[in-house]
Image (cartoon, rainbow, N blue to C red):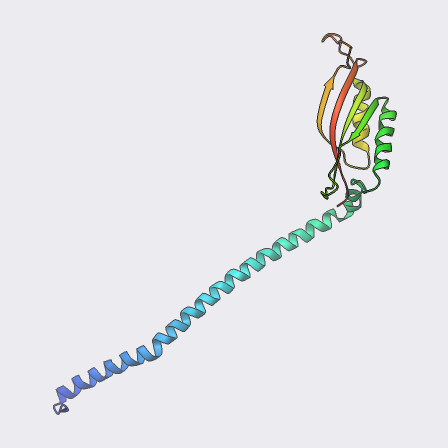
Length: 187
């Protein structure tokens, strides 16, 4: 190989070697650095997303703790609205007392539950007889009980054998009601 001896050829050769050296240096140094920078950028983005999620969870946790502190005073009251398992007799006597206090007669039928199922619901049917005012008083008594009574269905009718004309309905008219209700055991 013959090296250039003329100044013009020396300059061209120097430029070609310089461009080649810069190209090789770029390929060997800059390209891996660019890949490392991309990888770091991706990792930083993922960490930013994770930090934002943690921040949002922290905000939700703060809100939950704030709400808990607000309802903390009423938790004992909320615990009272549940029936205690094994105290079904107390429930029955309380409902019977409510019927006696309001002046209606009633028949309480507890729904049968599968003992294999661990349910926290007590479903029952109340058949109530009395006049409208006493029935409303009975509903108010049920509402004022310490435990929660969820009335799912109310069926009103006149007792069997009596006929009530639409113009005769008043507060002293006989009334028969069937209530399908649910109360809950403490979980």
